[in-house]
Amino acid sequence: MANQNNSRKISNIDGNILQDLILRAKLITRLMGDSRVNALYKILPWASLIYLISPIDFISGALVPVIGAVDDVAIMWFGIASFIELCPPFVVEEHLAALTGEAPSNVVDAEIIDD
Image (tube, rainbow, N blue to C red):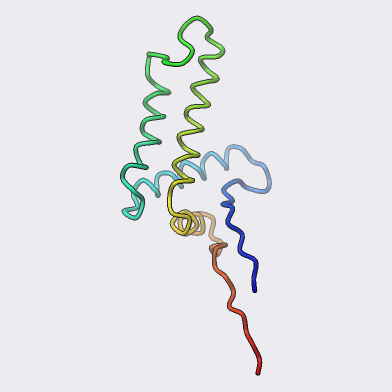
């Protein structure tokens, strides 16, 4: 029986951060437009973006500006990562395959039994 890898690989192996960010942005855009993704999940990226651009900092306030920037990035990362994790895995794999030009990794090879 073939081993099935349930982890989702979004990052590039070569470590190019800019390409990784572009890939994530394209993936999120495609997932936001996909009707198979729950509408409630689609609130996460929007809410984290609104928090990022909001003039009111709910967590750290204006007392410590460095922590303010760090928590904004953390909230944005958490919102996007949670959104991708909550989406159906086969939908994420399908969009990743379309974006990268590779075959989906969730395809399991059938076992062949010779008589």
